[in-house]
Length: 452
Image (cartoon, rainbow, N blue to C red; front, side):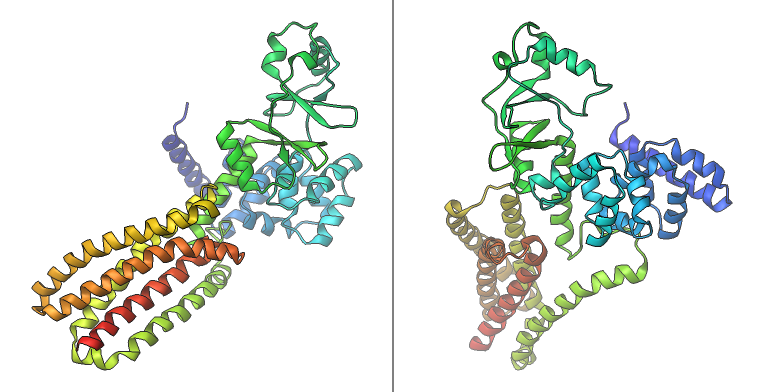
């Protein structure tokens, strides 16, 4: 069995071999190499290739593999590929994909193109897909798959087994058969493990589980992911507001949600999108990053304005220019520690109205203790370095003020931004950096102006 390190090494070897073959112009050899790989590996190699090489590799992917490969690509690359295809080609390419995967792909397209793709599909596939597309992408409805096996509670297990044998295969990750009433209301779960070991003459109603938790179709996808994690589910049924069965969600879709949430939190700290293409062209990448750099420039000028207000004080005591950046930097680090912790707690559903006040007081205490500790250290260093006791007291006082401000701001900002319906992961770090810079400079230079 390959370990993760072995997989990475093998992927690098595949990429090098394909690059060498492309450079030599041996496209027949590349096509053969590429299509002998698993579709997930092909997608990974496409994402790991520069733009021009990627276009060549995509044209060499076998037609029967294109849909599966497309499904594994990130949204940015999916959109690039889909925009070059006609609706009929999209319908043909995605034929055979699971409904939820197909919905995810089509949602990258304009509304008019989606309608054209739907018209190019068969009636059964179109009806299933329209049902999923009617729900927001970031809810349980956007994750559900309509490919389910259902039975009635009055059937015997022998009938269920014979019914299953009529299928060439059952849907992947089927751990439970769903038990429904005549009006399609979900009434129970029939675990496959029970079907295999129980007396065939027993009825489904005698064996099924009635103490279960179904997922409301409107539940946000991050809450669905938390339920799967907490309950160790492989799959779970999805119901509407009337208790009618709509489909099910499987663990592979939940893994995608968890990965996307983690990527989002990580990338948003730098003002980037989790679906950004690593090897996107220069102009496209520059345009995306320019907006966030512009926001940062505005906040940097705000901090500079504060410094400029105390230019006369800095002229009198040059050491202030040396030390003021340390005050701002310490506040920035302390604030980001709290900010990261709180954003993570919010993502896990651990922080709400009942415990947020306690968290604020806790962070105030942490900020005060760390402020006192590092203020003493900073003061001693300032005395040794500049032999100025007054400067040391100012340095220590500003350190305490900024570390307390940073800790409280780091706890308060995510909650405040969420209330304003602004993504804390995206805006939190920039706002926090502005606060710690401004308060750090203002407290340090303001105290210096008073004492000098």
